[in-house]
Length: 291
Ligand code: F3S
Image (cartoon, rainbow, N blue to C red; front, side):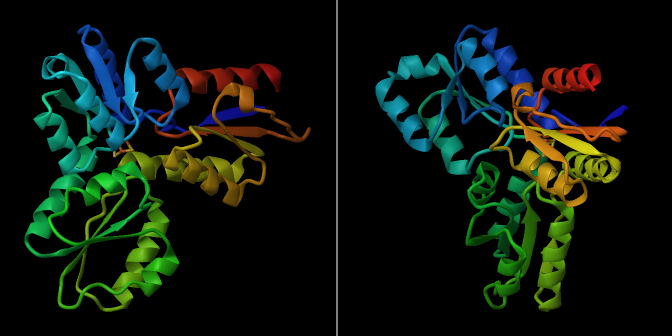
């Protein structure tokens, strides 16, 4: 039986860069905080917290920390902004309070921040396509200098009416499903609005989604490895389910209860952007040895 690993499975460039920076910062011996978990993967986060890295879970917790620690203690501590980015106001707050701030916002997300900042300053209306609760989207919204809307579904796109007389600038969450984004764009264009589209979907995501679909279409079983809270891993799971009924979504090897028909010839493996290589190799070895 053949096992096929999707070529772009696992850590993308931005996540790898952010995680590497955290490991570098641990070496400084300073108190290290990350604002939110550095990646959407509990295993990776646990490995870092075991080495002393602390996770600030919310804006309120950040404020409590600012009240609790003296200015001198804050100067001795570092807050790392993760690859998703944060709203401008949050970053400014950290800097004002005197922490050393290390920004590992992925350059592709940073590009969106700059785009929306610049275009909204010119009076253009920003529409972000993505999940409103996702930290990346909250970060993007927080870099707009004016009104901004967020929508996620085709139904919302059908109902959407932008403010009259304004040029509409559409950007997307970097991990948004490429085909769905195209459909939303078509819906908006058909309405005849003055729309400027900036395709901000990251190639890493697009490539991983396309390769995943190709492998899943031929696989007897498909294993998707990723954090439960990872939106890009969830999207990979949805893509696989469309073409392969026998799809498993697992966080670690312990979650895998693989059942294969006798006739099975191909098992495909893919993984979200926050899944470390070590975990992918474990799953690959498990399937190789047991089936
Ligand atoms: Fe960056 Fe793309 Fe990863 S935007 S964080 S390289 S998925």
